Length: 265
View 1 (spheres, rainbow, N blue to C red):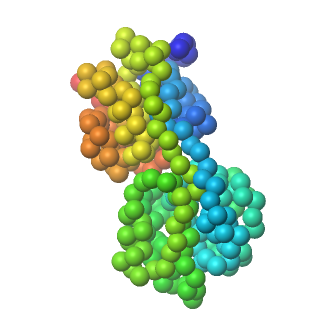
View 2: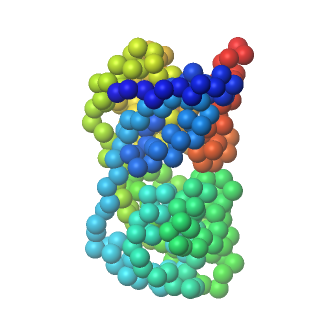
View 3: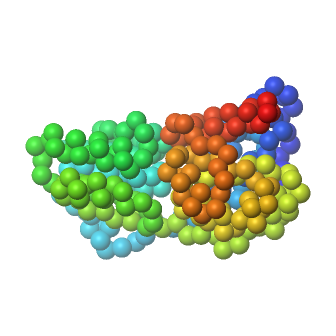
């Protein structure tokens, strides 16, 4: 796999750095463009693939949105599912997004987001949902749209607060079985410096695919959130940088800071 040519700007903060992008295929171009503008070279190797879940339970929920007070969307992929349904959202049913990226995806699909917590994690969203549910005069349950795997922290928060809810997995993330040999060769040759980790599932799959290279110190990991960093460490990663703010912008800034710190060491 050919590495794109460097941007000839020695002052670019990521000049000389090559970053391995591990998100699902359709999600990598956005991050690649952000990094390349800053001088980085990028290599795309999705470590998971996304597939929709077609189930009678999900279809029933989509046909009965008026039964819910708040529709809670836990990822961009879940947002794409909801906007792709082309079903009208009842005027008295609000939409909550876990983070700015998910919110932007929903709004790009023509849906209005009522609230989004400042920190893109289940704890912050859970607190916001509990507050919103208790303030409204509406006993209809909360609907949660999510992946087939991931944290159950949000469900635990709502259970403890005795707030009724239903949650459905609307897509599944499937681990890629083996790495591309040409990408492994680039890493082995020292032509790739960083690996991005944007979810717990991606961290675990990335370790499965590139664990030998990670353990050999050939890849430094940058993570999108403290929650992802915790899962990555449990999988065996040493985390070189963790985003201080939610979203891809935070991930990119964490990488910039880590590169600067390494250069001044």
